[in-house]
Image 1 (cartoon, rainbow, N blue to C red):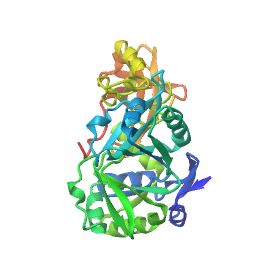
Image 2: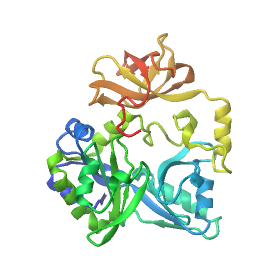
Image 3: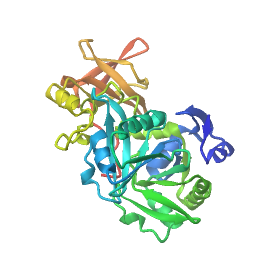
Length: 365
């Protein structure tokens, strides 16, 4: 089992530790609801150093990445980040990722922890056919801290007074120094709240984490584990690999058509997307249930005639709404918000309704 550079801090803070993506990671500290609420109302700090990260470099790096991803990097200038997807030829999703454009020949990729090895091998196998492209795995060298919540930028400005954090737009990033080391601060995140994700060498992680915790004490900052990270992203309707998206799901079936630029050049999976676009049969929607029963992944979804129409992708009790909510993959004719549905929970059908996403209004646009 791997440990992040912040593992000892989590352990001393009394965090509940679990195995996630091959790492020992904190799932909660004081409790999921308290941590979730802190992010929605004040600020939360997350250790997400288990995420995989690679550099793709060289004069043909952009051309190569264009060929294996669905979004259009020609529209991403240096200093910006772009949400993207890698597909199999079948149109199923290898992974979703964020690509940071350092310059025209240097790209920094952050991928899901559970897919790091698979993703690296996928990219490596395809880069071999491109001259002048280098692939580097920096996962074990770098740490990643997320600071999210209404007070996040105020806290960050106190720790980095020389950096105009507020001037950074969504999906923009800058580089600065902390204790002599170069770090990257990006206006990205997974919660819907204002905030940043900060990438740094492992040796800088603990002093920066402690500086942010101390700087945010007056604002009510709390360390946040993977449990609240999941409830936060689900309230926003964000996709999670292995739930809303996977190797058997086409992005057009998962509310991700906006990430697939069919008007750009060839990319792996493009033809499969074209075929799905011509005959789209299912999609992902939000739903809520009556009562307090919890919907879980793979639970079956039915129409009011008790005909099976799909399955639950993710589900939880929303700490903000105090209501059972989830996402489901269902036939297109049932996707309209307000459509009544039934969800089978432990052999009992519970009444619900299709909801538009996100469930909670985001603080960021």
